[in-house]
Amino acid sequence: MNLLNLLKYQLGSKLTEQLGTYLGEDSSKVQSALDATLPTILSVFVRRAADRTGANDVMDTIKLGNHDGSMLNYLSGLFSGGSSTNSLMKSGEILSNKFLGNKQSLLSDAIANFSGIKRISANSLIKMAMPLVLGIIGKQVKNQNLDTSGLMSLLSAQKGHIGASIPSGFTTKNMSPSTPTPKVTPTPEKKKTINESISKEQVKQANVKTPPKKVAKKTNDSPSFLRFLPFIIGGLLLLFLLIFAIRSCSKSKDTTTTKPKATTKVAEGKKNGSDTKNVADTDAPNADNGSNSDNGSSNSGSSDYSSDDNSSSYTPSAPSIPHGQFKGEVEGITGGGSIAMSGLDFRGGARISRGSRHIISELAAVMQSNPGMNIRLDASPETRAISVKKGLMDAGIDRNRISTSSGGSSTVQLTVN
Image 1: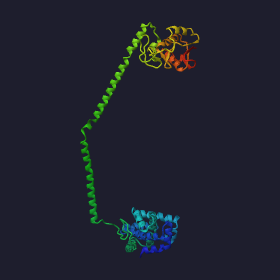
Image 2: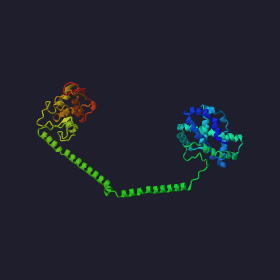
Image 3: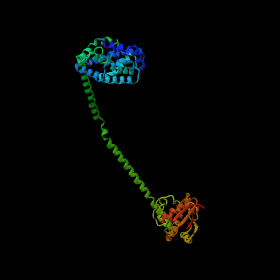
Image 4: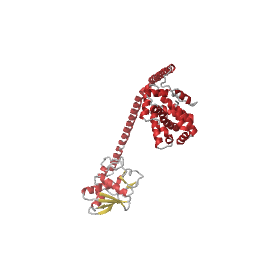
């Protein structure tokens, strides 16, 4: 009994055309694909049933899956799409995974290359053919009431039919449908090849292990100065820090050497008869670098006071007034009123010259004697009024007692609140 001829007869040309329409392929190419697919799948079942264990497996699959050939009675409905086709494809996928395993993709490529259909179409064709081939086998098991031994005999008799049905030029690697031998025993030559490949692989691994030793040897041969590189960098860093410290010390010494000059100027001022001690001269930190009060105390540098008014080219911008005169004028308005601080000499916009700073000292003394006295300073620009306020704050007057505003002339106007 030739199972392939029975199956091809039931399929016929019309069903082949219908299958081509479903797959979206040319019917002649589908027929060529079927000619290669059906005998190949039948050979898979023949090889599996070559021994009793495999035959029992095929028999159990037929019975549990109800592959009794009943679906062959309505093949036209299986290739029209819909639920019947989906059910056929699902059944074929289960059978392909069980009997083909990882050879399914190999068989799909071989069928696609041989027939010219797409690989996805070849894969679908395999899933459809698996239940059909098992169904034709199951139909004979049912009709002839075969047991496992009968199944083995039936499938063993198909070997010659399979070899005659395989198309010329169709081959698959690691799979020989024309020779349905259940087990492929490696030949001595193959074993020798495997052993040789293992030996070669071991040699390669041995060769790979050798280079690291050479690399390590080269590492030890590195220049000796690299070992001392961290010490060299550390020494350079210490040298840089030492040079920086020496320069800082020299700058500090240069700053302190300016103090005797200022003392000399103060001494000259005392010889000229200016012996009055002013609060702003001793306490104001806003004086220029090197400027001193009448009693010789040093002040820090600032832009609010100018110390170069002793130069021969300097011309005061306001007439100087004798010491004590402005104090008397301020005491006269402590009850309320205003007075112009015309004796203040500004340089560079808002810088108060050293020669007129006694006015700030006299005003601070009056405010210290009158704790309830608050003042407002008006000038244009306001920065001049702010310079006077800073001088009073440096003399110990609370900043909240002094307010400033922009207005009036460049002469600072003092108003007692």
